[in-house]
Image (tube, rainbow, N blue to C red; front, side, top):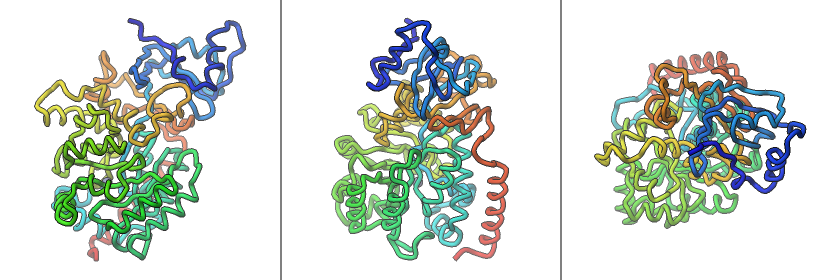
Length: 470
Ligand SMILES: [Zn+2]
């Protein structure tokens, strides 16, 4: 069976004419493009999971113009061509849940109980400010670009600083202002994040890279009255809602006691369980919760590595995936999962679901790569724009080295990616048609400056901890 193909059936109407003319005529002048990736082993992650062993990807105006066999490249002319040298070319990975600025706290409060209230909240209360958020976010974004992440879903304080860092680095982001029931680093009043989210949404509406969102921290840190307000604001402005859901035992017991509901039922009762929600974790969900998540078409961020480390449990994502819920993969913050690339999650997702189900056949590698790419796009309800290499989609593309020792031999790209690849194998990252890392060199940001800033911030954090956090 030939694996070469041309995806005419999936082309948006506007592109059909152009592409047909390319293939329908010979001897015509090459079509203009902005960037050509040639000599590529293309893993498209389209609905058929087509793979093109000798392929090309053509990019114009931040979008994918065409994907097909290598000869396709001869039909286009562009100011820049990247020879992938036979390496794997994939859609960029989507990190559906993180807190990038917390890179500044990475490695603090590991391996201890009640980390959230004993370490994370006090560190944030004492230390988080605009500057820390900006540099921490930028550092986290660099790590993601280096690891092949092209879209991040981030929730933190001073989210406008995260947006500033993302714009500089060229990262795509769904960025949510955090709402919480106590005075926060960016708001002296409890729940000040709601007003901040409205301002943030106004400032970034229509931005090509940034999708503003609102991020109620969790059902146990935002009361019912404010969840209702957030649901209304989300509906009014069509804002995505990012939230930790069904993650904590205190959350389960308090909602059972106060409302006799599961967190999923509770969110439904306040009007938040809908297509705008991206629910992180969903560890403690019942079969009827899964049915409700599907009926309401909510997105789910599966953070396997963070969940293993916290010893909370394995979210029933195998059931969710098999029932075609909108599940993507996330890293959670660097105090929870410690690293921000998605490649480092893949093997754990495949293997822990096998162990959890006592069945080595379940959660095959191809399904895990699907969750990392088009699954993440589905979790964001952005599958028409992101998550696969198909004409008309946004040009978020990564190139992964096949020459690393652990990648040789390569019989099955999915197996290699899930069970052998390392984030350091990502050679080149393209976001919105812009090459933001080429052959491991970040093109948009002075990495040395960011690292120097991070070390200076870490020294201040160490000094503050030595004096004692209030
Ligand atoms: Zn989180």
